[in-house]
Image (cartoon, rainbow, N blue to C red):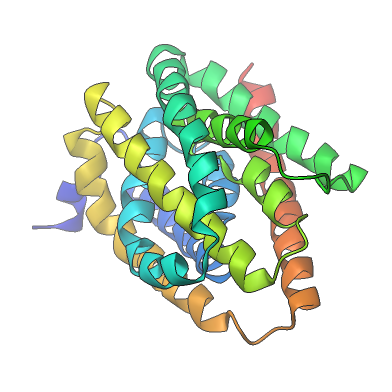
Length: 258
């Protein structure tokens, strides 16, 4: 089958190539740090194609490409602490999915851009959660992340801001993040399927974009372990900041379209 037969009719060949390029960069971030893919992919790709298509596409390719990382994450993660957050995601994901299925594309783009801008402010403030562990806080953070994931697959900031601020080894923080999103992605797959967001177009398009994204995840994962803990955390923060800056053109596009 020709690649053109796998690309949705409302997405041009040039746009599809651009989406693939974005997928490689975002996949590299995901493989290295365990997060960052949506922060790069969603603001840019949703300025090229419909947010509903892009969100479903990212969910499919990330769910499949990141699956090989889960067994090792299961061994290294603090599974009890992660499970508490997963409870929150179980509630938050369906709510976010509901809004994605109901909101207009332009409104969704505004919200995605707002997430990116809010994250920039969060980074500039230097805030990290360094208080004591409380189940209610963990469930709340998991719920917020789940909502962001359901709406725009951008659930990374709350989880990353929490786990990278904890006094734990980088390997455990990364494993917790990977394990949480494995569960969150599963909830999203179920929720997106029930609301009709996973369509034939998104599945076929994933056959084009998915391999490129998977190569990026593999490449990023191969880089992990070659940096010290301090450098690892610095790179993670830089990835978020870079994602915000990269997303600003998408915000400009939304402003122009308004």
